[in-house]
Each structure stands twice: as C-alpha cells, then as structure tokens.
Amino acid sequence: MSQLSLDTSAKAEEIQIKLLRSMSIVEKLRLAEQLNQTRDRLAFYGLRKRFPHANNHELQRRFFDIKLGYELAHKVYGSIEQWCNNEIIE
Image (cartoon, rainbow, N blue to C red; front, side, top):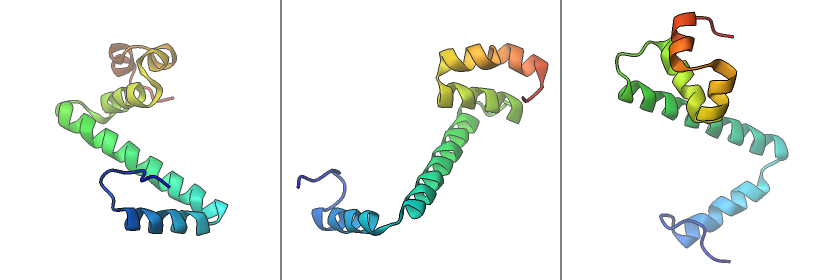
C-alpha cells in the first residue's frame, strides 16, 4: 500500500491503520467528535488572533462563516453587522 502521509514514517502509518481498524464504530465516532471539537477550537483561536478586539458574539458569527461557508452563514444569520447589532444567539 502506498503511504498516505508525507510527514509520517511508513511504519508509524502502518501502526495507525492497524489501530484504526481495531477500533469499534463507537470508538471511531468518539475520535471523529474529538477531532471536530479540536478543529472548532483551533478555528475560534485563529479568529481571536485575527480579530483581537471582537467580542465573543462577533467571533461566533465569524466562526459560522468558516464552518458553514460565507454564503450559507449570511443567508441563515445575516451579515456580521446585523448579527452584532442584534446580539441575539439563536
């Protein structure tokens, strides 16, 4: 099998694949949820760095742009300006 990751040795990758194959469905779902939570925390951290003066309400709206994509977030939540003026989290 060809190597999937350029920054992981073939032996380490082989061990990772064996571990993943040995996991139950529930364990895989928990792992996926943990990865999603980590992704979300990193995205929020990045937003805090880019917008240091924004409050949590504005950062939440900007996070929706990342998570849903700008167009869908704008359709669902309105513009950032509307969101920040409304101050209601639905």
